[in-house]
Picture 1 (cartoon, helix red, strand yellow):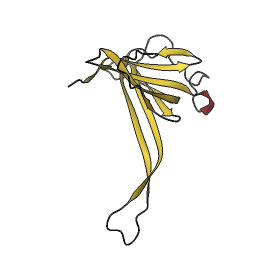
Picture 2 (picture 1 turned 60 degrees about the horizontal axis):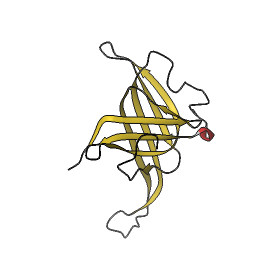
Picture 3 (picture 1 turned 120 degrees about the horizontal axis):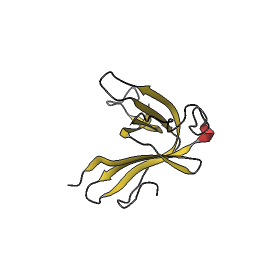
Picture 4 (picture 1 turned 90 degrees about the horizontal axis):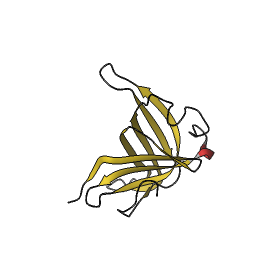
Length: 147
């Protein structure tokens, strides 16, 4: 059985046609949801639903670099709060059997950044993204980051 691994994973935030590979990535999560509208009638024995709108969000945690932030806070590059500044977000993980990358990707806006540190840890920066439109899956095991 082939498994996925975090080793060699990668995150790309495409801003102004220039791929920005977020560095020092520690983890990423992508959450896909959809609304349900209940259509149960009084005479029904079980609740019934219709699938509604779909949505996705992503979070990327990185070690905080000593230089400038990778996606500057509040700049036109981030698209913070500006739906017309969407860029493609690509989330990669390593596929053991193929020794290549596989990913989910879609258009998104960066909706926030949080910076934190603990007394016994390393400073981190966490980016949150709101998906705009469809979340897609690279179906080929041979895709490389940025393709």
